[in-house]
Amino acid sequence: MHTGPITYATRTEADRALTLIEAQMISGEWTDPDRGKVLLGDYARTWIKERPGLRPKTVELYTWLLDRQIVPGLGGVAVGKLTTQMIRSWRAKLIDNGVSVSTAAKAYRLLRAVLMTAVEEDKLLSRNPCRIKGADNEQTPERPILTVAQVFELADKMADRRFRALILLTTFASLRWGEVIALRRSDIDLKARTVRVREQLIELDGGDMVLAPPKSRAGKRTVSIPSAIVPALTEHLAEFVDQADEAFVFLGKRAGYLRGGNFRREAKWAEALKEMGVKGLHFHDLRHMGNTLAAQSGASLADLKARMGHDSDRAALIYQHATRDADQRIADALSARVEADRKAANGKKESSAES
Image 1 (cartoon, rainbow, N blue to C red):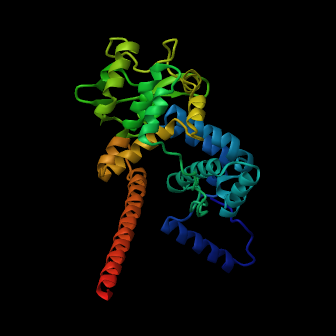
Image 2 (cartoon, rainbow, N blue to C red):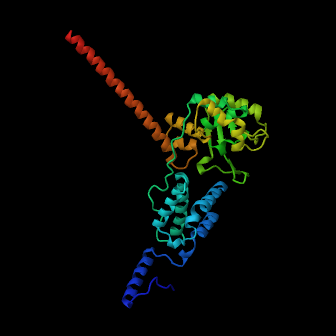
Image 3 (cartoon, rainbow, N blue to C red):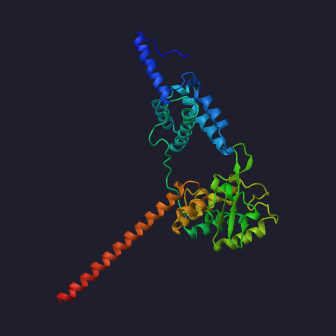
């Protein structure tokens, strides 16, 4: 039994309200008002804890977003009381308080996913109040892209030679940081010119390094590598890698897991970029460079997805579209050149005819 939300003046009005509620129950739109009383902060923490298949790094990210961005503004609100206006106001306050658009978008996507479960599985809400157009868009700026010559120059400028092959393999095999530092000797086949990706190394916020499956189901893959980087890999394996099949290919100076901070410091990453005159380049941009080169080679959508290790078409389409745009600009330039040459040729003919 449930008490109505208000007191009705007449029995007729009460019967009419009951009829509307019964209609909602029949259509599946009615939600139990008592169940919706659970606070968003409590519900979201349970959601993260019970979500199947979340990787440790993802759990850390979701927990941080919840504690830092969502709970302060909405954590004390009952799930059943959340409205689109509340969420719009919460997001606006995040931006006003200096939270980046990218972080706000991540927090919004997490909130939307949590409330989607509240709607579809737990029936705490009749519809998801996360309905703000564009709030999930991170609007990330265009990343810098090196030329092929600059990739080799960067590799040669690494302060420690053990990182030269790391730069080349990451770029030309389109590998993620966690994938490349998890590679073992048996994963690299120099005769077949392939590298096998079967796991990734994740550095948690507490400093622990954890071996985990690749980022997506398609992440487990075998990628062909160009013959141009085989000599660098051959030299690296001979000089820096133990002969055991399961020996890690890339380690730090003290033979421990290679961490991002240690790499940047030991390789003198920032100094190398400054010397080259390159600004704002992140290690992940090397993979971006490799994906761009693969798309420019004319690879199909399916081939790009397989090489990049993506389940969905979205990321691969970005590179294909970028290549198509560049190709169209080339075609337009060629067309303009043809028209200019034709006009010049016609002008010569007219001059000859007049003389």
